[in-house]
Length: 372
Ligand code: F0G
Image (tube, rainbow, N blue to C red; front, side):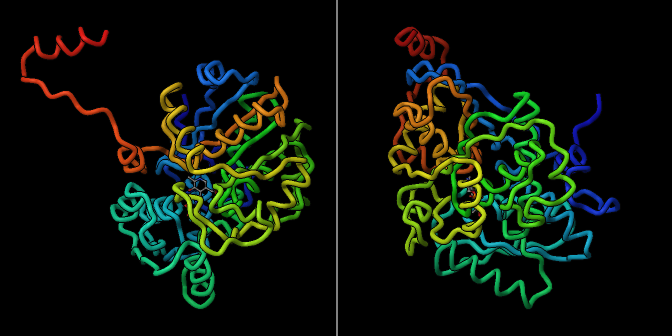
């Protein structure tokens, strides 16, 4: 047995890092690809649906794949501090990987709308937390400006090393299935992750992609593929924050899925390239659909993802039912983050009253007998 030590050690030859750069890792990656049996039966759809549960990463989201690369590269260049704007998960990952590297982290978060678990992560890892009177898009504008004049490295997904790390999720899926799926569905906010997956699949196919921020499909990694198939990429947005559906930035994005409450996506152009090259599409889900799907997945399969993550599965189920995704397809949905980051959203929805009993065996037995 060799100890698993994260995506940089696992895929070093396929990542653009100097050979002498020391990996800053928390053992991210190697997340489970879970086949949905109960839910497929329950919903009456005919397909092989897998969820790639990125919520099992060290800080509970896919951001860890990108952050290990961004922080490793930054520290190798001598950086002493990193900076990001975030709806919560990026700040959690930035704070954790900065702690691991022994450098400082500064995170800008939008007023109010951030899940408590994510905020707690930034606090516990010692980030300097700046709450901006504005939304994520305001924060993003600010960090881009500030990083031009201050000695900090910007670790949002405009940092190309982030996407290079996140592409490894596609590698893992191809390894697990033996080839790419027919369809890959993701929740879309800044559209960095959908771009990163397409880069990964394109490298596996040996074709590269114009969407790659580093090489536009022309680096050595792009020429070494062995499995020609690439999936159609489908990006689902929350209806109140769906610039890809509106064809332009959305001024005041709103959604219960706070992770993807983004009106002005940073990877706008690359994501359209992904859509065109892959033959996929964008669509939107309502908040009600998102929350219902989060519950369905938790109750049917024992998988607890955060609301934004459920957007991918909610959209996929709808498109399977309508036939837009043909019956018999192999579909992978990325569950981007862990449900435990945002317990408020579940408890706010109400829960069955707890049963209070005296501390005696018979009282507990009575509860069981009534319900078995
Ligand atoms: N799902 C979750 C749980 C996220 O946290 C994010 C993005 C996305 C999906 C969308 O990914 O931006 O690459 O399209 N969260 C960022 C953050 C914006 O600050 O944590 P994307």
